[in-house]
Image 1 (cartoon, rainbow, N blue to C red):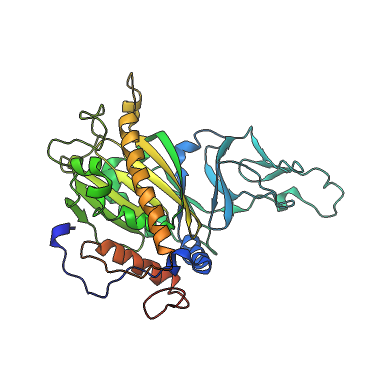
Image 2: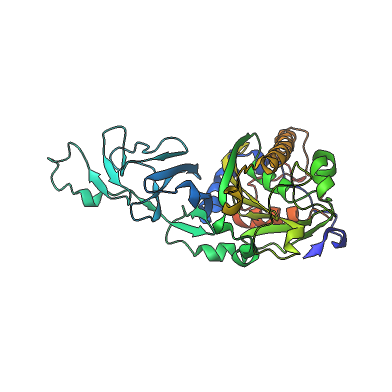
Length: 385
């Protein structure tokens, strides 16, 4: 870990990526295969499927997935596709099934463990066996109440390999004990990489987030050395400030288990490729990024708090929700404007500052996995100019 002011100089040729990395549909498709389908992807919190029959549905990396809690209380993931003629089983983001998942087209019906239970009009098909046509399973893993799916070919590596030591880093926050108290959905006209880049530098904070900068100075931060599965940083709270909130005196106690030092910082981590974790002394915010197109990213933001606080009379998380809803919208506007500028014919890669080393590391991470553009110009532009 090192203070922002102590970072060494960087080479003068450290430039931002060429425009095509953010606008080219072919490169976006390559990222979907080489990054998103080659890594565990965050799909939501376990408390979104609290009881048997409750399900959430996701569209990500070219696949439709449904996550459902079974009668045995186990949470499983399946391709959200009927085995008959391919119809989408569960429409929308979430719902509740009464014991079965049923296709709305021809009423093929599946148990909550994915087994085919009923297939009308198939009784005279020679050799047809219900047992041969279960829903196609999707590997699912859980970390601290967070659900991840694997869409790659072959058996997945352990989720712990991708998380590295994040379980230890976040253990004091006891994420698995926290419950969702609010949710906001956002649609951005920006590439997913611009969202992550924005999240991992605060040089824009004095100008774009004056309310945040008053509570946590933009230079009061440490970066953790980047890992293959994540990027991370912490920022200190200003003297006398107990958390990030719209209220001078927030109504919550610190989360149990945090040390005095941990109650003085806010963590900003990206679990690559599509999860952000923003951990405060008294609450945590998690973001789920869905890369829809080169110039579109959908984001779902959930606020997590301790159940003891939720149970208190008059509980109201509005101060934390409003603070980050405002800050999020400020960031999303910047990301949209960055996308619009990079897509312009006048864009050329620009120089990074020595305080943007996390962004340089992220660019290299993308290039290591998805490779370079097929046709970089001599100035780094795409198409060549």
